[in-house]
Amino acid sequence: MRTAIKYETEVSTLFDFVMYYIKIWKISCQDRFREASQPYLDDVYNFFGEIEALAYDLSKSVLIDAHSLQFKGSIIVCSLISVSIELYIRVKLSNEALENSPREPAVLSQLRAANECWDCIVKKLFGQSSVAHIDSFGRYLALRQQKMYRLFRIQKVDEDVKLQNIYKTRITPYYHHAHLDAQDVPTIPVEDPAEAFKFKPLIDAYAPTLEWVKQIQAQKYQHLV
Image (cartoon, rainbow, N blue to C red; front, side, top):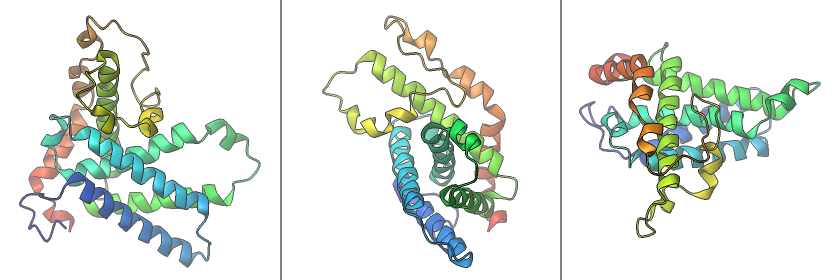
């Protein structure tokens, strides 16, 4: 996709990149499972569907965040998929249950393999040392969307503004958590929400990550192909 547009600009939408990356990921995992003579488990198939749906929903949320749109769609979506994997594991899977399991179920083995396949894709796209940066940028984007969701919930936006299309019920479990850097604050006085949801501290905290993303964009990916 980047070759076809000659690294000049990314006219593809965020949703194009969601479908493109997820398809590459699924094919990579299928090849790996086939080489290991492992059956494609239903739980793993459902896992891909959950990640795709979550990345899609987060992409819709990013579209109403003007600050985030200064970054290229290919990096945004790659980071959103990475953080979707992290949030799914943290929110949906119990760490305590995993630790107490006497032996690793086959599904966990395939989930680990799928995560490794995704890391390999990230390295091929943005460089061998890019995984930690992409993960960090994904957390930054997710935290921004988490804050925006809480502002939307507190402000009780007029029904004429159909943001329900952005914040669907299926995504709310991924906003109601404190697994990243944020704390879930169920009630905050409506009269002064700005004080509670300032974005500058978040931007400052992730300044090194944002600088890395800007440098990668400035290089136009040419050295990574």
